[in-house]
Image (cartoon, rainbow, N blue to C red; front, side, top):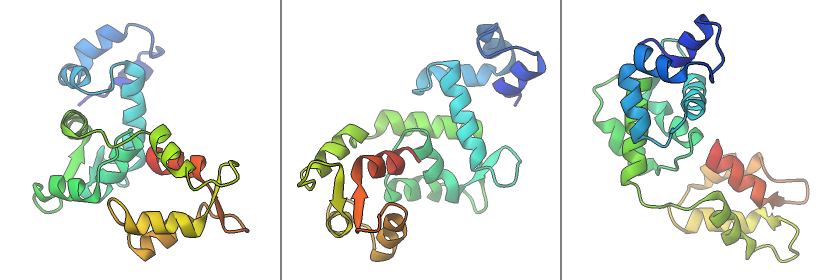
Length: 184
């Protein structure tokens, strides 16, 4: 596959120059995926491609199935661990996912998934724990929420996650926490 960003760079153009020509001539099969996925513009496409490349540890234009969940989350989806496992079970051992496959999986998940909530909705949900209305909640209360509600996390998972966000007083800036967790 000749990727869109490579063709733009090779031609010495910016993403706004002759985009439709680039889409039609260089990545014909990607054009169809773009119309089906939330990446409705070339900029979203390039953003997806850049984020995908962050998980391409071998530099071969593919990601391992173990990185799929993180890559999907980085591009705006929030699949559960169960959903990711269900998808990757269909792969034959050691299968690495190409960018085209990733876009198709993204579009499929996007169209079939239930609305799982937005950053704003999760932030508003945690706001009820913010007694002082200062965007801070006790890490212990957030721990309780994460281990007992919804898709429950293990103590180890919560420890690993909260270490990054807990300040010296044991408080978590929950709007920042939600944003970072949901957007990667």
